[in-house]
Image 1: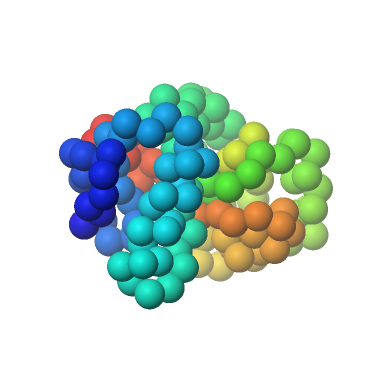
Image 2: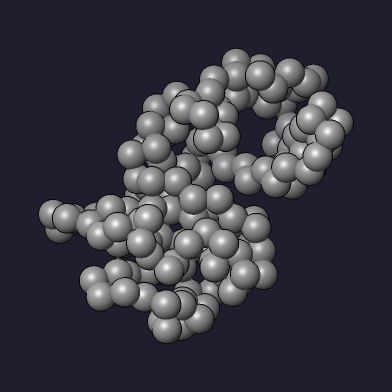
Length: 148
């Protein structure tokens, strides 16, 4: 459980690093740095933290480029540490399998795939190609986090 000054009402969702909380810190970069330092001190190794406010999470949901039509594919969001232009999506063209779509929208990469376990568009590839840190969540988890 994350215990540190300025953070309260901590709620976790499944065991994959999903944590919702209230914070008096409004600067996301400062908050990220504080949490990363606390985790490294407590655990003895560095952990990358990606922070989104509730308003940003609602925006991620609203900007889903795959909403509207009945979607037979699974949707994932890769939350990035840095923002990128949509044209960077061309970096991934050679890795897409039939039926897959990938969209970059600021600090998020949206992926529609039939089988995330089989896609070449993994979180590791996205981090490598964009040169930033990222964490992926399936669409159900993204929506659940917005309700906590």
